[in-house]
Length: 433
Image (cartoon, rainbow, N blue to C red; front, side):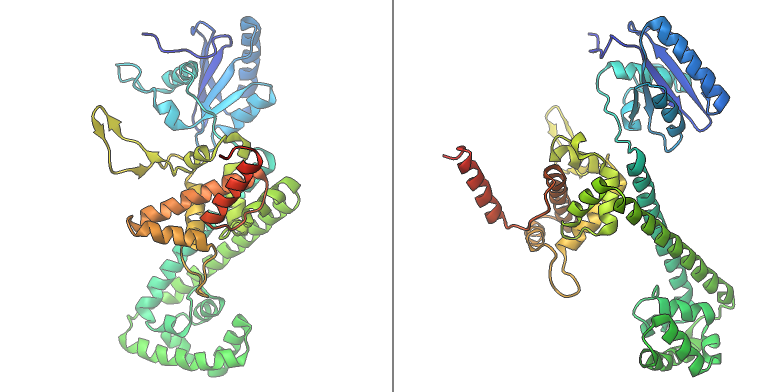
């Protein structure tokens, strides 16, 4: 039985993208190969490619729809050239194109074959375009992802710094609440070893701490005493690491540079949102949800893009990769359900952080969302904690969808209040019994 084919009224071009070149294959309406070749990602080669396409369009009396994979950033330049010249381009997830790799019995894998398979896959009618942001939204996505990268880099270097301090200066962290704070970093940058701390005068250390903390002598003086006591103990029990005189200041210099870049990225994100009324409105809507701050709102908006692309909350949940992966064959039904994780990993990262804020107490002992906290607590009675947290994440996705779809801020309601409002709404519409 032949597979059901899709739009036969227009030609289709599959494009297999690599770093410096792309292979293309054009099929006519009868699925015959009419053009095949390679376009290099240079101005001269792309101009020749576009001229060839223009001639082919005249021969076929139609413009082909273009299919390419989302391959990191390599597809973007050719994508722009095609769109700017009036071609319809569908960028698909590599998972979709991988689904047809075994259509032939022979084990053949090369760029020429992949370009043909991409074109043929379109005819099967199962392709869905990737959610590619444009303009300001594209800038916001790049900056938001850069923010996450910088945050990870800072955390990695803090871990390396802690490893050095714990070996040569045990007890240092007991003097300060956080190693990554401005005051402990300022002390370690100038006095990276216990011997260096003991060689400094009390007045020098007090001045350094007062300036770094901006809390004055009352804050610095008792900590200087504790720091010198820790340094004396460290000389007795800590490791002798002369290399820390170079390693520790170097690590701190990198941390400062990364933090400076992070501040610049955050400032640019804030400026982009401030200067775009639509982005500002949607960001404010997302920030109305408990646990969603400036960065998480910007990241969610950048990754989700246009909410109208999702017809319901389940589709958005799948885009987050939070939908369950189903395993069933014949009489077998899998009982250990796992997340599909086929969506955006950036979205899952953001929503997991928001879920943690909703499920657990704050430092002051209160909950940002008592309703979701109670929901998490009830789930934990018969589910593992990770599973319960995933349930909270899915609840939050539904909230995000409703807030962006209805363009109304979040309102905290108990399940009973929610049911009553739905009942009242249905009664007014004449839908209730």
